[in-house]
Structure formats: structure tokens, C-alpha cells
Amino acid sequence: MRRSFGSDNHAGVHPAVFDALRRVNDGDVPAYGHDAYTVGVARKVAALFGKKAEAFFVFNGTAANVISIRAVCRPHQGIICAETAHINTDECGAPEWNAGVKLLPVPTPDGKLTPALVERRLGGRGDEHRTQPRLVSISQATEVGTVYTPNELKELSASCHAHGLLLHMDGARLSNAASTLGVSIGEAAAGTDLVSFGGTKNGLMAGEAVIVNDPALATELLFLRKQSMQLSSKMRYLAAQFDAFLTDDLWLANARHANAMAQLLSKGIVRFPGFELAWPTQANGVFVRMPADLVEPLQKEYFFYLWDETVPIARLMCHFNTAEEDVRGFLAVVDRLSGARTVR
Image 1 (cartoon, one colour):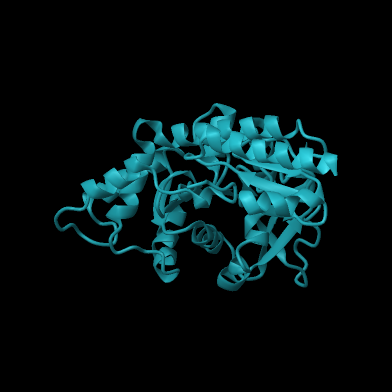
Image 2 (image 1 turned 45 degrees about the vertical axis):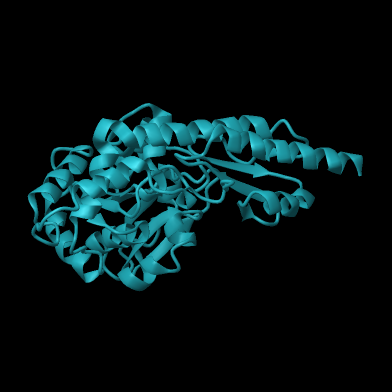
């Protein structure tokens, strides 16, 4: 079956994850995460982020983001985020509807927030007529495929805390960012107060984790997870996936491969006339401007989404199961269509 470049969600499940699910599929254990196995895996995941961190498994990334927001924001407060942020563009208003808070989006040149960009949204603090910023939410990697460096995170975290703001990270592709940076998962999320740690885009079947670095928030998460319909009765199956994810650094092997395929695709596609990168390829996504008349013919042979239909900019996503032959096959189609276009 020909693989698409539509999303890292289109990939299947890594065999090691299936094996882990089979291993825990025996006998009776306490429900709702109170079995010793789940408790142990949660501690392993939390340890990636620091000594005081705690981890809470949930089903999906939108829930992880919303629960994080609900844990720290009241309805009169707001969340500063990049205009391109997933919580702003692709969660169907879930943060506003479920958390009852206002998003305060900021235009960015590359999907990344900076202290200066955040400070532009701090006007009106203390004014009872204005939404009060409480949380800054960033994505690592960002929705346009860029990555925050450790120094950028350090500066942003320090600025947030100096202004009395908390810092949340949507880490749906945190593994890819850590691989790019050559650092640990914890270092790729340094300085954050809450993290939505993703696994589904990197080989898991269904599972994300909410990480909190303040023990006081852990109690809130216990109740918010249940109230948000994210408390799995058979929690061992979520835990098993993360156990496989961390064993022998499977998360890193998967992310490293996806990133490598994105680099191969990125370097190959800019050789063709009319194709140029919209942003640097720093994780597993390639964002490329392309001739408008080639979009439809290309999509007939390989599925992908348009990030911006007006330019147009295509979003080409690689994943742990993308093969080199998939990339070279796609580039061969681009070559053929570009040649036919020149002849016309």
C-alpha cells in the first residue's frame, strides 16, 4: 500500500507497542490506573521531566491540552498562543468550550513565541474589563515544523514566570523536537509548568500524557481527568504503550527516522522549479511552496494537506514508518509532473 504524506497520525502502530499490549493482556488487575504496573510506568514517564513531575495518561492530545488549561485557568483568564497553534486552529474550539477561557493568539513569523511577542499581549492586566492572561502555550515542535532551542525555552520560561504567567507545552511532536536538538525529552521541554506529551504521532495506538511539575496540580488532575471523560478504566493498556515507547528509546528511534525522511524529502523537493521551503525543516514536517497547477495532479498520486491554499503551501508529514522508497517515489512523481509542465 502506498503511504501518504498527509499526517503522522496516518501511520499504523509500531510492532513493539502491539507486543507490549499483548504482554499486559493477562489476568485481572485493579482498574482506573491503580494497578502497580500503571503506577510504575507513570513514574517512569514523569521522571523524564523532573523529580517533582507527575504523569497522567489520557486518550488524545486535545484532551491533554484542555485538561492542562483547566488545571490552571479560571474563566476570566486567557491563554497566549501562536496564531498557528493547534489549540487555536485545529481543536474545534475545545479550549474555549470546555475550559471556558479565551485564547489570545499572536502572529509569529515561524510559529514560535518569544518574550517580546508575549509581552504584546499583556496590556490591560488588572483591568476588570479585560481578559487576564494566565498561561502561555507553545508547541514543540511547532505546527509549521520549527523547533524551540533550549536557550529559547529558557528565555521564554524566565519571561513568563517574571510576569506571573505559567508555561504550557503542546508536545504532540516533542519526541521529534528532542531528536532534532540531540537532547533528552525533558531538556526539550525545560522550563515548562505543564506538558501534553504525545505518543500517537510517533508509533502509539492511542495515548498521551499530561505532565505537571507542581505537586499541587496533581490533585487537580485526578479530578479533571475523570470529569473530562479521559480516565480509562483499563489504564494498563495506555501505560503499556508508554512502557514500550521508553524501552530502548523507541521514542527516539521512531522520531529520528521520521526526521531523517523529512530531511530527505526537504532536500530533494527544492531541486524542482517553483518549489521552495516556507519554513526550515527542523522536525518531521516539510512545508513547501509549490506551483498551484501541480497540487491536484500530485494529490491524485500521494495524499497530503495544503497548509495554505492561497500560496499554495503544502504540508508533507513523515512518520516512523515512512520508507525511503516512499520519499523517492514522491520525488519521482514531482519530477515527472514538473517535466510535463515545462513541456506544455
